[in-house]
Length: 95
Image 1: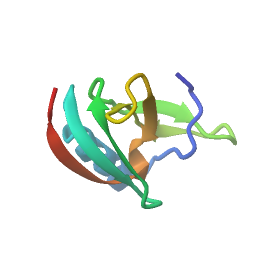
Image 2 (image 1 turned 180 degrees about the horizontal axis):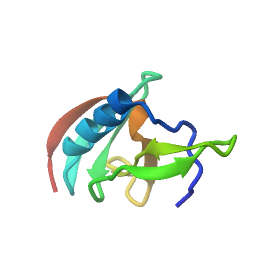
Image 3 (image 1 turned 45 degrees about the horizontal axis):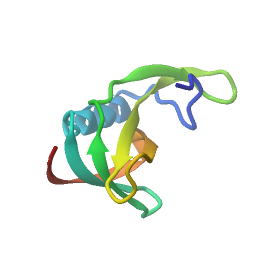
Image 4 (image 1 turned 90 degrees about the vertical axis):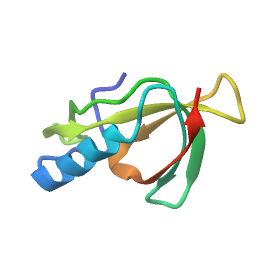
């Protein structure tokens, strides 16, 4: 997995928002997530994400979290989504 993130965060409010999103994403939960650009992805959470330290393109250090979501419509396809981009999680069930 990459150690470079699109965006990194050091602001405690943003880190708390990411941590709150993590709580919504249990192992093997089937969810639909909506990103900040309006796109939606439906899938199974492979494992609950965790806050990790990354660097941005300028080499600055901060935190973010990456979700691996196995696509419901296309078995064998996984989406890797940055938690700071997720604006909504809708639970569809569990595996």
